[in-house]
Image (cartoon, rainbow, N blue to C red; front, side, top):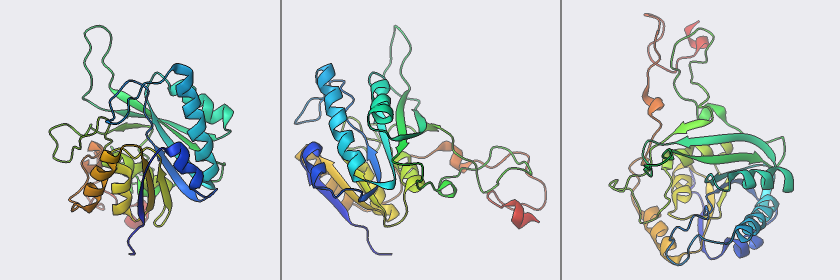
Length: 273
């Protein structure tokens, strides 16, 4: 397989996106700042309310422009602005809603008053109603054997369980919002093919680029902080030894398997007949 083209650009995505050809990108994976005041080295994620909404409108406008008619966009967002983001994508930019994905994790910020947050949201929209989606690439083993089930695996659903990349994990980078590789891989496998062009306008620690490198997708990353660009370049040059996370359901064996006729999970009903 020919090595994918991995391009990492340093600068403001609002300016860099203008240099991307219209309708040239198959998939956008965007993890913009949530406007919660996090320290990203050379900038702080803290704009005025209306200023942040205007920023969101600006990059979404460019994102829609560069997306192919068959393309998809996934956007990570925290609870404070998720409803505004949905409205911008759905009503203001006329994208087609597909799924509201909940990324659930077991570790997070603790609270003594109120409930501790244990999830983030991912909005999945498409540019048109005719889009790429590869369910067979992301199926997970069935929980139970039933003759009517597709034993090649089940749809993973819209609640995804991946642990954070813990600070003690050797794969952890010096970045405050690093996303798990297996989570990003599910998005890329579902909504692109080999040699597709994937765009990450907020590449951060470089997870999207790293995963595209392994899955044979061309990828364009954009990052404001030059220190994170250097971090990503080191990460791309390092030997790959497996993803830093996984869906715990991936290793399960279906309950109630028949005693004969099915040697292992993943055997289809056609193969049994």
